[in-house]
Image 1 (cartoon, one colour):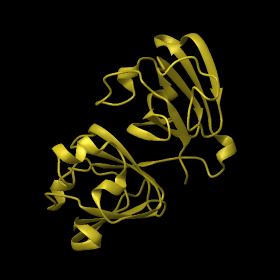
Image 2 (tube, rainbow, N blue to C red; image 1 turned 180 degrees about the vertical axis):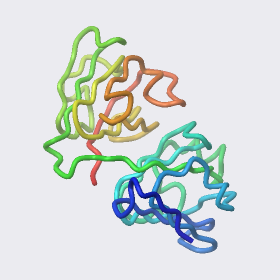
Image 3 (cartoon, rainbow, N blue to C red; image 1 turned 90 degrees about the horizontal axis):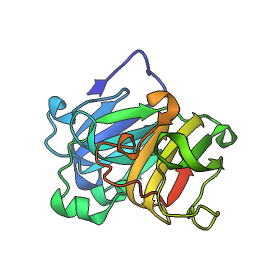
Length: 201
């Protein structure tokens, strides 16, 4: 079964399964989905991203922890990324709304400015690369109060080494402006961001 959308048709494709290792019931999506339960899924335990980059959410209606899903295979939920505690509290039973994201074809087109405090105030840093540790590149602390994405799409992580909660930042959302850390994602409780990377097409 395939879910189509003319707006994004042909550029994005993800297949979700209700059992680990690509077994059991499956459904193919080519556009965003607010709640996979509407398609008869109670759980998503594995998935394949065949084209495009996607954002998965812990809860329906684009709520909860975000997971960046780039081209490749995810045979178990823990392969999605995120923190281990999420999978302890929700053992392999994520409601996973899916949203296609639109990174540029060329990584050189990705640009973001991070600010020390909310509303684009304080010290700022210009980013156009992957940074496994913001502190190692010279950022003064482990928090980012606000940010602007001029082009492309990035995933920001709570801890160095691309670990912890993930926050997807796109120039197409919020007009690229995230004035306060609470705009980073519905699950964001702190401005703690310590690593950032560009999202691949």
